[in-house]
Image (cartoon, rainbow, N blue to C red; front, side, top):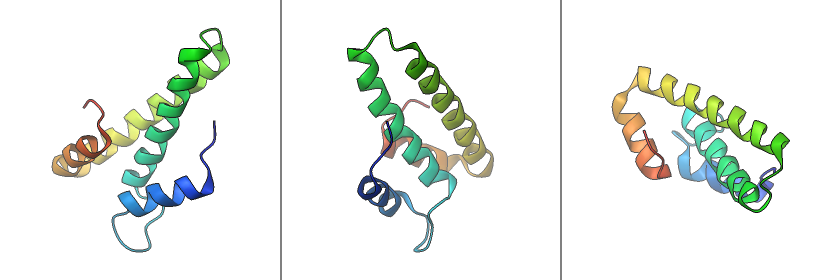
Length: 89
């Protein structure tokens, strides 16, 4: 369930912190969220795809760790990011 190059560029432009930013924690969380949403849709139609479910759980854990890292730096950045992504905090 990889993202297309065009979709990645759209996400980077939306969530980058500065002009040349491509790998900040905010961008990584946004990319992971897009992958998680896409994988969740896949699993709704393919309930017995356990290997993809395991991958989904790994992605969720990785996003959780990145969000914890952002929280350590600035609680305001964390709140703004989860509001923009529409995820629970």
